[in-house]
Length: 239
Image 1 (cartoon, rainbow, N blue to C red):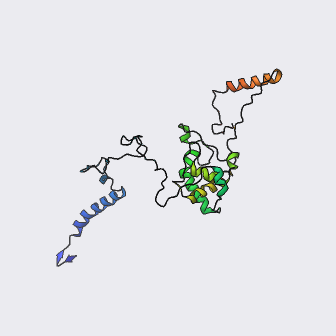
Image 2: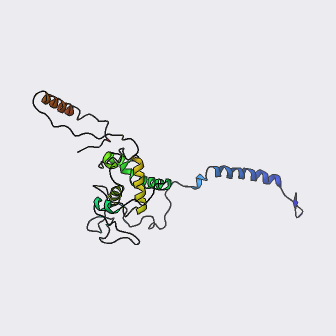
């Protein structure tokens, strides 16, 4: 084969080109790993990488309260934001009704928001003990318990929005329609059987005679088993 009357050394090209092509193909299969160093990069200007700023949950000596994360200014709302107006569940129940009809799309949205914002404490099922609780957080109520089932949609919406006990409010973190979607999804969770029945309060009836003996025996049995592990760590205590 000739170009401009000059012969093309095909044999030499094949001898050199085929190994080079094979090498590149094998390197590509490996993802060009040798080009990705595991060592820290050389930084000419490190100010963008190591910034003088406070991260979430860190302390700060700049503010008097030593908190880097700042609280909302009282009486203000974010731009295009709203203020949750109800201070008690009774007020919410008197005025609110769930505006969303149950549908697959609403339940899917409620499940997504529940898993992101609620499941870390309440668990995916709404009944189990999560790792956060095992590490010391107070266990939240069982969402499938009878008292939770007795809550109206407006009351559940109020708890999500304003918070309850150590649970913070999520009115500033979740859109209103997302909170109502979570209410519908909680109703779906409540259709599951109760995994951990409530523990009844101990009887204090220890009268004289035979009944007194039974009362003392019951108390002794309680004391004897106090140090033993219980299989109902997820059970709800009934006051």
